[in-house]
View 1 (cartoon, rainbow over the protein chains, first blue to last red):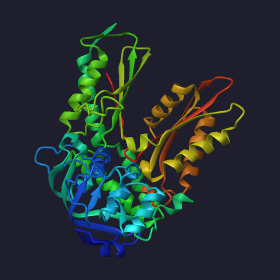
View 2: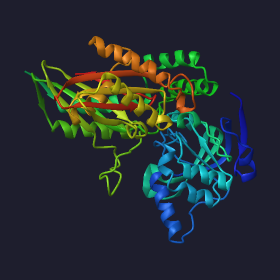
View 3: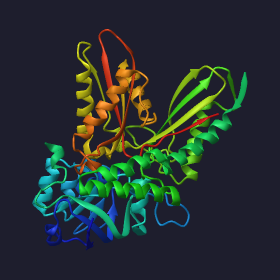
View 4: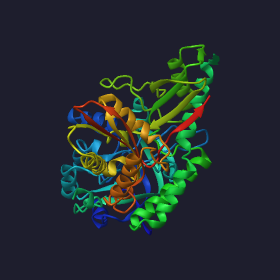
Length: 179
Length: 280
């Protein structure tokens, strides 16, 4: 399958061009955040505090890696299931996040938020952690270090493969499943 | 009476946990290679080819197949002619998990309490199921299973007057509801009969059975074939992107039940079906 190369940050103009079913190869910076990090981040935003990492035009990756073996940049790092972040995702899209990466379908509320803010939902292949680790060239701890694997990490990625699962028009690769 | 030190059980558990997280059986990769050739969807075959490459990288470079190295279920069958010596067996099983998850650079995914949710930091405790069996051997099966698919598993208790077709309908409904969340193509374990806890346990045990074998009970073997074929007609496909490869394996275990009950449980495993067994 032919992939389309994209470089971060991802603007809404760029996001508008993406279509469900396309294979993207992302190069640049993405941020990991999963369940506990989302709960804490949205709690901070609710209290009027600012996010400890940039959100505008950024890509959030729902992932919690295994520890790196000696000499490795990162351990296994595939996506976790997206629906568990459904309650938090609209808030982050509203604040300028242009893409989230997970696996599995999203709620109608998240699809509406994606359409409203001109964002996308991308699917990395679940259970592809060993292969995906080869596309991560640097890792930096950014926030919530006490959460261990669930901490927010800034990843530098090179041609990181994902599928456009829900595009900015709300078209979904999972549509058949919803019938 | 044979004497066996629980230290040997500890060391076996550590090795099995690491191996299970890095390697799938060649029968699994062979099944994926066959599926990649027959899969009709372009996106589906791309996913299958990527998964095959992932298994190769994991095994060769010693990186876990999936970052979710799971909560560990341990099935421990102890021969009644074995006398265990040393520290208590359950402590040593957990010590084995602790050593394996540290040494193998596996993810620590267990929290000490379901409500306060503080990580235990060593992936313990495991969930251990013991069985006393004839003989002087100890058989250990280590099943690290991720939450993505475990969260999508289902249990129901049907009415005793319902039919096998209702059992099949529940299994298929469970697969549809699991959808892309549970990382298809799946390996599916089904339990039928027993009671509330027995049926769930059978479903988990069925996931760890050899996926390419069939039940010795003729109607159950037929049910395994039929359900697998019907699930692959659902067109969920690899990663839920559509296609003809939704499940690679499906095994069923049955048990006597109460006149008023027909329990059914469905334990879904993602494509990274991980279980390793040792006989000591």
